[in-house]
Structure formats: structure tokens, C-alpha cells
Image (cartoon, rainbow, N blue to C red; front, side, top):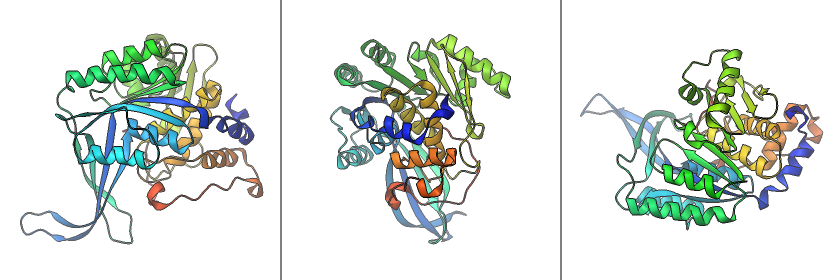
Length: 366
């Protein structure tokens, strides 16, 4: 049972993270934050003028999955497509600076990097709030030669990994050819799909990690109560032929369904007030896969993914966590005396993001 996962067990599993090689394949997203202070109303139009203060880029989508694996000490290897543009250069540079290989990231000169630009405004000593988000998305398929090269990269990449995460944000990276190649080359390994709209396309994988909205889209009915949760989980097991379904339910916790074994329903850890749910689904997929690759059972992986989500939603922006923070979350859940708790390493503001006033929300991968 997941409640038997002790801090000692977390450390045992974490001791294997450094040797876990996990492929991450999917939509690489650049999350760009433009921050400034409100100055005055424009004379040109009834709009607010924001005085520029800073611009930050952090990994989003599949790139956030890579970031989470790296922060936990694993050895992620990634492939995907970015443009020959400033955002693509910055995203690649982000990982190179941290020692994560980027040699399998492809560049398409005809399509720009998937970018989510958020304009954040607020006084200098107060929390910035999002004013507008501008998304740059590919409106056409990636070039045929780039798609062929991506499949070739998958062939090479899957030869030397213990598992794979396919991160599908609804763009064109994960074509049917790419998914089929992962399924064929990854036979017998841990294969996990985190998909917004195409759960049925990942038939036969080890696990899928939908949130309630994604699950509703796949099963065709609304999830309102416990009976609906049970029905949806069993329906997804049958229709996708996966071994495990980890259904994330926001402030209602998570539910794990398995072909072999009874369902496990996990309440959220900590309070129900959160700071930012951005990228929480990426963290769930990363931790679930990493624990399974490290030898953990499905219920252990679900419990630790739930614990990890409780940490990252208390940070601003798409965040990561360390092993120490994961252990500390479990210790808090188990009621370990304060004097025995692991001291989680303090992270710099650049890594962690500024804390914000709690707002209610539901973890998702959007």
C-alpha cells in the first residue's frame, strides 16, 4: 500500500535515480515571462503601460519534464523540435548550461519554437500578476525531413534507456510514426504518456497520466463523483490497454488504476491552497516514471508523484523539486518529528521562483 512508503524507502529509491536513463520525447516549449511595473495609461489607447524590468525563460512542456528529472538527479535524454530562433537558442542553452545533452534536439528553420509568452505586471515589492498570455504555435506540420530525422533519433535514443516519457501538448511533434517507433523500440521498458487529447494513441504503454479534463475527453462522460472516477479509470484501462492509469484530480488527490490490483485513491498532501499549478502534470509524469524505472511499485510511484505535486504547486511558475524536498514532503505526511526531518536544500530565487499569495487551482499540465 502507498501509505507504507517511508522516508527511508524514498531515499532507497532515490539512490537509484542517478543511474536511471529516461528518454523524454515530445513538445518542447519555451515559457517566457516578461515582468514589469505598471507606469501609467497610454495616450494612444486606453491601455496600461508597463515599464519593463526583466525577461526570463524556463522550460515548458516536454522540456519541463526533462527539467524535473534532472533536478531529481536522473539522466534524462531528450529529443524534440525547436525553431531556428531566439527562443530555440535560449531553450537549448538552458540545458547545455546544466549539463543536459541537447544533441538530439532538432531544429526546423521553417517553424518557430513553441512559445508561451506571459506578461506579468505588479509593483516592485508585490507579486506580479499575469496580464496576458501570447502563444506562438506551429500552424503546419514540421518539415517531412525533420519528422524523418526525429524518428531516426528515437531509434537511436531508445537503444540505451530504461524508460521513456512522451509529453504531448497537442502540437505536431508526436506523430503516429514517432509513437509507433517508441512502442516498438521500448518493448519491455517503462513507457509513460502524458497527453492532452490523444490518450487512445498510446495503446499498450505502461501508464498514462491524465487529469480529469483529459480523462473526460477520452471516456466521453463527466467525472463528478467517486462512481464516475471508478468508471473512468476502468474504461481507460480497457480502451488504451495500458497497465496503469494515474488520474490526477486536483484538490481531490489522485487515483491509480491497474490491470492487476485494486484501485488506490490518494488524498492531496498538505493544504488545498496552491500558488501556481503550471507544469504540475509534467512533475507527476516525471516522478511516476522515475520511481517505476528505479524499481518502485505502481502504488509507490503514485504516492510519490502525489507528494511531488504538493511541493511544486507551492512554487511559482513551472517548478521542479529536489530529492530532499520529496523526502521532506513524505516526512511531513508521516508526521515525522521536526528534529528528525530532512533539511531540504534552499533553492535560489532563479531556480525556485518567487513565492506568491496562495490562490485556489487545480494541478494540470497546461
